[in-house]
Image 1 (cartoon, rainbow, N blue to C red):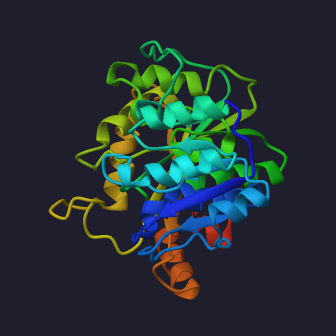
Image 2 (image 1 turned 45 degrees about the vertical axis):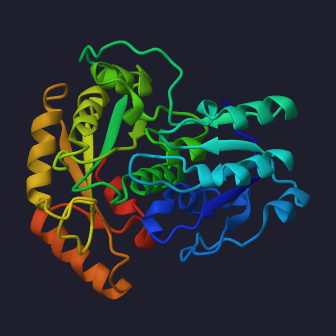
Length: 331
């Protein structure tokens, strides 16, 4: 897979900031690869990049049109087909991280074939996987896990990698979701792997490596989320992590998308993840807590992190506001 920049990030008529995480991730972590964002009437959110149109982006050399939004079920609404066809006409390949596949829409496939454009359904693995073995692998692994979905596991993983590279570590970021794959250019969208092969696919992400090499593995879902605990468990077993970093977002009272659910404490999240991870690595440990403090002021966020650090006797940081050096110091 080789996705050609620069990108035009399409966010449609989104009204939920979390729903444009595909576009926002690219804007935050590889803005130099992005021409800008394109939205339509009704959109109330933004990545912060320059707003442009398909025509303007094409004139600036955009090579890839990224469907930068997500929705429950990962559905590609047919109302966006004319927009996608327009982008193809203007010389762009198409990237989608939705569950619905571009290649299942005949009009898109026909237009792409006619114009010699490429369609990237990056949420759908094309590799064949085997079942997990639990056999110990060489090298070192860190997995980010969370109290809920969309709490910052990918951002934390990328921040940890950035801090480790700065300090001279031999380290790689292993993408397990569509946003991470867009940034890294490779990986496995673990939530689209058949259940029996989840742990095996996770093992393939971080194979045997040098003794001092670290793989930073992007977590998915949450063991406490009724809808997505399965993918979290398979990733925990297959990653065989030496260390865990707990990710949490402030001011949530229920699990994302489930208003009647109960939200777990950080302490419960630590307990559940350590218990599950010990199946394939009995020596696993938690080395830090990563908090998304964007819902409060910087000062209040740092106060909360300091309180949690004292409570759990480990570093607690907001990786976007303060970086991840404090957690890396624990390695």
